[in-house]
Image (cartoon, rainbow, N blue to C red; front, side):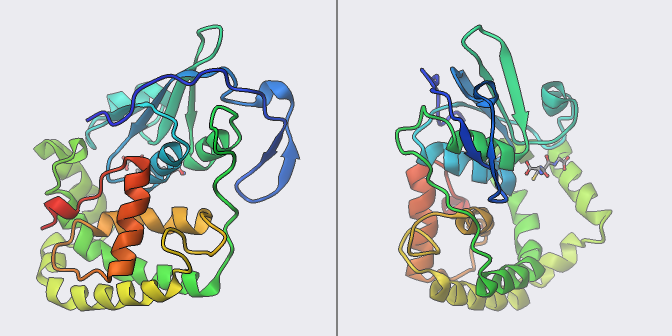
Amino acid sequence: MDRRRCALRGLGVSLLMLNWAGLAKVLPASAAPLAGARGLGVHVYDHCPYCTRVELVLGWHGLESQRSVYGYADVAGPTALIGKKMLPVLTWHDREGKEHKMSESLDIIEAIESSRESTTGRLIARRTGRKDLKAWQSKLRRVMHGLTRPRLLQMPIADFATQADRQYQMDKYVAKGFNYERALADTNKLVPRVNALLLDFAELLRSEKSLNAAGHSWDDLYVLPSLRVLSCVKPLVWPAKVRGYVEQNHADAGVACYFEHAC
Ligand SMILES: N[C@@H](CCC(=O)N[C@@H](CS)C(=O)NCC(=O)O)C(=O)O
């Protein structure tokens, strides 16, 4: 399911990089991680919010990449990349043909943002720390997983293609006290709560495509992947403004949501 393919060409050197926390630091020219990068590869789980935020930023920058999606029970695949089972990972070759691998979504996004290959320049402002947004996110976290975890297993994504992949997800969350049967039985209780939060979210949006009037920021990157995951839950009622925000931002990046497969 490759959505992007191509090579980065002629990356310039970026001297000034702002890290994700917003602290300015000057890196030597050689530290511009994507300088001269070719053949970007993005290694992801489709359902993973950290992976989605990377794919959103790649897409908004118009940087194409070879997309590899791993089964959730596949230990060898991701481990072969960075020595541990954790995604996302970005891979590329430098001008000399040497292969590079980068993990940690924050670092990957910073590398993309600071690359000169993108014609857009920086797109993502710092997180604002909006209290209304923080409060909304913590309410959502408390109720969304009961709806999304069982349904994500039904999505036609490589993450959960095999019984072993689905079992891996279930074992992971059952070990943390999650109960799949109870969660599904609670659907009718959880849906109205999430519907109310979607209505609240419409009030938080200060532009059609971004939470803040000035354009995309880390606020959007923290929220959009959660909303994308919620798109697998059929009984939810999406306010037009919120659905537009989710669909447009993912479409702009070439990242599919789950609306059409919702159950
Ligand atoms: N700090 C990392 C977190 C990445 C992460 O937690 N990835 C999860 C998927 S959402 C993972 O690879 N989990 C492996 C597993 O649960 O087996 C980042 O921001 O990239």
